Amino acid sequence: YKFTAEPVQCGQWQQPMTVVFDTLDSQTVESSHPYCQSLNTTRHYSWTDVNATSLFIDFSELTDIGGESSLKFIYSDSRMNSTKSESFNGSDFESLVIESPEFDLEFLTDVEQPRYGFKFQVYPGPSGFVNSPNITLDPKDEHTIQSSHPYANNLNHTWNYSADDDDVDLIQIRFDNENSLENNGDFLIFSYLDSEKGSVTKNLTGQDFQDFDIHGRAFDLTFLSNDSVVDFGFKFIAEAFSCSNWQTEPDLTFDTLQTQTITSPTEYCRALSTPRHYNWTDPDVTSLYLFLPTNSTIGNNTTIEFLSPDSNNQQVSQSITTDSNLSPLVIPTNQFDLKITLGSNYTPSDYTIQVYPGPEGFINAPAPPALKEGNTYTIQSSHPYGDNINHRWTYQTCGQDVSKLVIAFDVQGSYLEAERDYLIFTYDDPQGAQLKTFTGDLSGQSFVMESSEFDLQFISDDSGNGFGYEFTVEVVGVVDDAGQDMLNTEKAADLLVNHYQLWKEKLLGMTK
Image 1 (cartoon, rainbow, N blue to C red):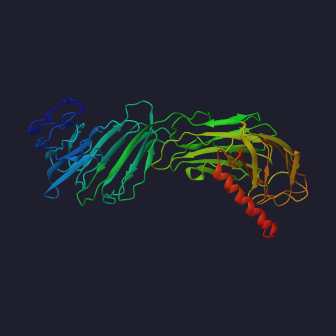
Image 2 (cartoon, one colour):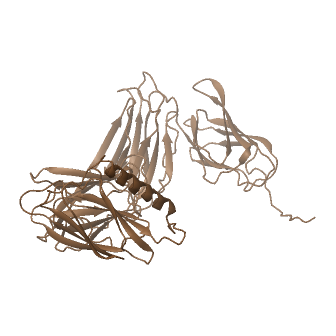
Image 3 (cartoon, helix red, strand yellow):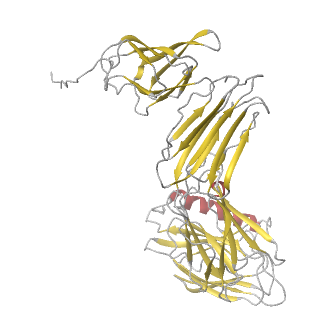
């Protein structure tokens, strides 16, 4: 046989059997680190200060006692006139409110393997508000703040919460579902200096507590109750964020047709309530195509809103959210305002907005720099397009593994003025130079180019126009000798089925 023996130094529980405190200062209670002995021990903790009528227990994130061990708090609830107990195990410990100035702590352990043990802070205070009077808000760390449940009559306490990190400029307040105060009798009051709104005071009562953001790094919290009745109380999370200023300056003006990039800083988490204005002065810029690369992330419940004037100078709103799959947007003008809204329980964003300026009628990127194998790209005109257009663009693929491009028009959104306006594809395939011209109703049509690049030309006259066009370009890789797509077999099979069905329907006269 062969085994490894590893010595581990174990300590006894660090506090004595009975501990008495005569101060309102917070106290640390902890086991040895690691603990590894089989323990079945109870310790008693009490506070003698007359103002210590309730205790708030806040566990360290390091606490881990394993799934088979347990840590139990046993105390006499002064409100309910009954004995209560709260048990914990594992490593996911929530804060605890004890309506008593004393408790027994029972620690039962297994002997499977050494664990860190437990560590927590005890904040003594008056009944009704038992959290730390001065919690320091650490960035990206959730702090639970709550009253006792229920709270007491005749309370009037104020506490200050602040972040030591100078980079913190946003605190989000998120309420628990069970908040309830005596309506118009008891009040929870937030007071703070907001960098966007100035001095702010929020008075909350009743049950309808809405989450909100504080654009600053500190707030005062006051809890008032009268002598009539009491309710469940309040509970919320305060989370501080270190946010950078937006990287792109506001109110930018561009005098070029080159692509422009608007970027957020890494992990952007600040709402932009005042829209920022972007304008293109080149006379050839009459429309804009906005695209978010796939590596962009928008936080939950975050909305990026683009506001632009229409032909009647009325504001038109278009939005990108997490639910829109970062779809591209078309803005049929040379300017827009950008506004950002952050919802509750959001995650930080990190995004880049690419803006392709161009003439009306073709406002997509003049080139996704290169069409990549296995990807699908959407190309479209403005809707509707303009008169007297004659523009030509070249689309190329990158790499040597592209064998064909599949063009498929949208089933509903492609119509040009028949025999007046034209969309022309030119390309070279193994049979030579090819030209495909489309006019009228293009909806649902598709074709395949055995080529790795193509030119696209859009022509309109001055007699009228249609809705415009929208199509996808699917880049298909080289097919090997077995007739299988080397990189995308399933997609190639789907294409064959789709095109077979399309031509079958045409032959049967089921479509135009």
